Image (cartoon, one colour):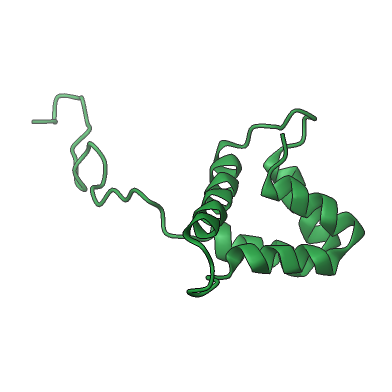
Length: 115
């Protein structure tokens, strides 16, 4: 099963400029002339890269997303930097404004002086 990250990795090792053009096409908004189905597919590809990068699971060949990204950066640095800047450096979907289950200041002492 191939993914955009896999395809970019394959292109980067052979034709770095073509890898950049493919990535630019996927990242482009396309304007009004682009169909809704194509826009949806582009967004799904970008979400897939984000998800696989976070999960970090190797593909069927044992190659992790980090390995693929490192190869892209090595062979096509422009495409690699654009992946990092445009796809992976995004605002997370879920944000937690709390500090966690403990308050900012907590007395965690368990000796005789803790009250």
